Image (tube, rainbow, N blue to C red; front, side):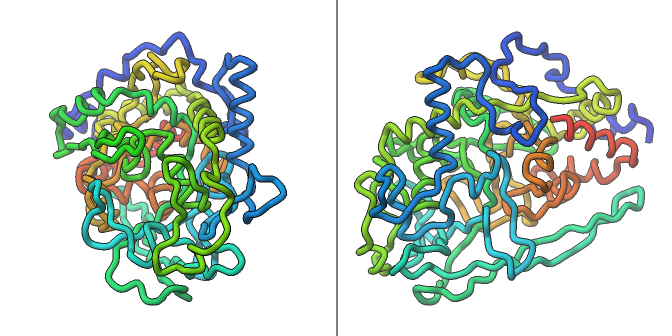
Length: 450
């Protein structure tokens, strides 16, 4: 099919972002394509800022210990937890991966739990016995919650040119349950996502998100702002972090992960992650209250806020430019918005007034039944997911040694991820299936350039 006819048939045009100028100040970008590409700070940080960045990095990589420990700054692990360190779920500040079979333990993946109903602020209602996150590990004297094993089933998609692509879907099996049967419940598997560029996403104004949600779009694409509870502000605000945009800001996202993944309390979440049925957990020693002091939480926040974003590579290569045009024409950019502008950040001025290229709208979209987890999270339904940023995508294999994508790591490469798209993304997915091989390769070359 000729390109002009294809574009006309799609009912789309090249989007205006293709002609936008590059910002003069690129301090938030790094031109390092090594295994350290996700781990470098903004350019131009002063010595005090660099020292704070290093302190946050140390906390991110620190292995937490059972209380009481000789080093009081690193004790308080558990009583229930998933990993010993933040970096365990975000290796190299990048993506975790799913177990490759039922005999492999979850290393950088976790399982969220809930039951029917909502908590007092409209969020998911935790499981009455196992809480809101399944914690396989526990400190001595406390039973862990059990084992979550992943089994894979396989299917095949045939592209228009005859190429066959194998897809896999995970099935979760709970074993060795430590606190009795789970009963009726909902669950969602989550692989640890990349953590660079988060401060820039936080600096995108809420008004921008609302304007993006209000835009009229073709193909039945909608997108909406999730509305979530802010612990610090005591009110419902726009969500933007987490795989369903269920966290309002970076500080709360960090504090929530510290508690859920490591069992480390903060002033935002001061209670240990023990349910009333977990008596040994409730009686276990802690590392003081809170276990992560506000200054430490602030250093972690500064670190995440100032992790720079890898710059694009090979952007002027003809195949990449062709793929970039296709990305807009196919409808991918309706959700994966290439460019956003940050507003004024109250605490971190270096994040303010920047043109960024994250390839996300930070909205939640209906992605169809194929990707559904069936677990609502505030306003995000069981088929809805936040548009994941694509910046840095092309360096994933170099940094993390794999190409697994989507919330549960089912896609082993970008093409598989595209083929799982449904719901609001169904039309764009179908256009990709119909692409001639050369154009499909151009699209993938563009995505590798990010």
